[in-house]
Length: 310
Ligand code: NCD
Image 1 (tube, helix red, strand yellow):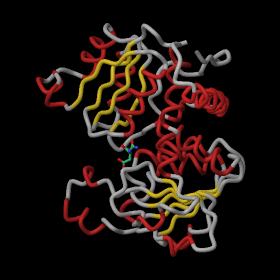
Image 2: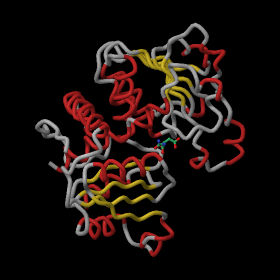
Image 3: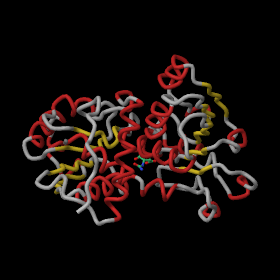
């Protein structure tokens, strides 16, 4: 059975937002994730045998949920699960805090996705076991941010001096909020923020760029970002629009084609699911990294579970 080297203590007990994650935390998580890739090749390990993950998903999920559950099982742990608000006591009017207090009594670690921004903070405050935010509405998605930065390190071979073009729904896309905060810890990182004016990056995040002296440009033009080291595409977040006609007007704003990438070496990323932002003609290009990116969710979540439970 495989083993991993001593697990370093992280600076956070619950993972609610990437604002809690230091550069040292990130590098420690990535080094354990690298070891977890070897553990996966050898079929897993029993590090978390006897531990239970409560996997609570009150919004649709494929990758995040399945990779959390795979990660726990590859480490020898077990899963209990609840999905869909309509099938849980939240539907009966139970508060998030009460529900989490109860689940903390059943499980050793909890991950939760919920449609409300701020729900993860409430849940973490009520949890007596480590809690991980698996997406709180349009707020944050810290484990996705970590696997995104891990992917950039693997694909580009470095984290300093990265030029990243972030494209699409920067207002409601929680993954771009999380990855931006994490990347801003590295030197010489530069952002090109490409979105329709209505879907610009929240001022809170660009304010953080200003405070940390991070260079960024905001534009509506996809072409401006095509020479970046990383092109991070996102979908327009249909479910966040109160006015559906506004979504209809903005959907399809950006579609990346193989032609856009001719002669370029940009690594193409996307948290997935894609709707039509990346034409399938891109899929066979060597720098199309989005399926490798989603696979990285397993070793990164294994590292987090192992470190948060150790
Ligand atoms: C993202 C999410 O849920 O925020 N998906 C994911 O977790 N990989 C992105 C999205 O839904 O657009």
